[in-house]
Image 1: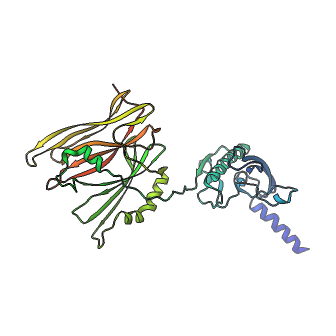
Image 2 (image 1 turned 135 degrees about the vertical axis):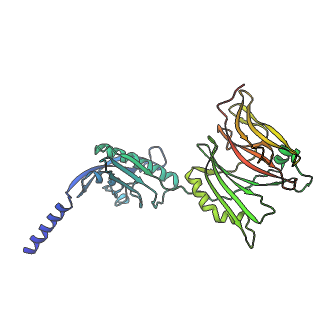
Image 3 (image 1 turned 180 degrees about the vertical axis):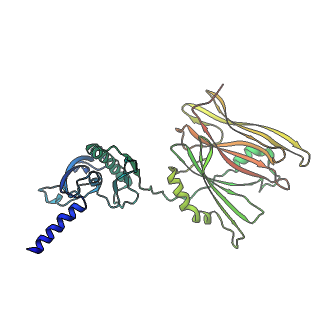
Length: 383
């Protein structure tokens, strides 16, 4: 009898110590509709269910959205079947308080392990957020909601270099060398893809001949401001066996693909579009203007300024880029737009490939380098 009394006293003391108490909480859960496919409009329903818990607190009303829930049923086929779509291993919904007494609810799906397809999982997580916001409202919690999403899986791909031979000669024929096999010492350009908000990713493999250097750079560029938002350089010297592009990609693809995910860039096949580009019943062409000065030491004309234009057949012309060169340091002979690199004919934002010919140290063949300039096809044109 004494032993039972001691145990009972201990249990009562423990519950008081840890501020727990019995109680019911009502929680909204995302429940699969057995009469519809998960991805159909009515495939998921929000249902309010009852839980009995020692912890009937605000925290429980939030994190209970992920608790296991097995609906009571007379049907054997549904008995003990998990009904809560949010009961996923690794999914965490939690409430925390800040020092200023404000609160934050975090929906963290970054560590989940799931059997669902990507589309089904995305839909479930949307309903988890809806259920959580309803649970906050029921509990009169006015918290900031922080969502940490599961990292998207990038489809494995191998970058493909653009064949720029025709565009090089068409644009810079006046500066080609007399060597048929090597009209230019040129870089190699690999387009990777676009994001929906106008970012463009690409790789440039620099021609470093005759130096024993391998230099490959990866860029993610914001086509609105033309700023480089992420850049990575791969540079190898003093090698026994010269690394090629496959070696570079094997070394760097994980890091590059992670950044593509972060910026929402989808790898896609991008083709070179010389001549005209069409958008919303309008056609666009490219042009440029250069100012040069003559150097007696090199017996050549070098750039002072370079201006790149885009021309709308219906609305006129606009400047999309200007470069200014210092006479003493300029080694550029010509700079011109070469082609469009469109993601589609329905996007108002387009990347434009621009080439620059720089004088070879001993004359032709000259060096041909590439850069990207962004253009908005909707605004800024003047007659």
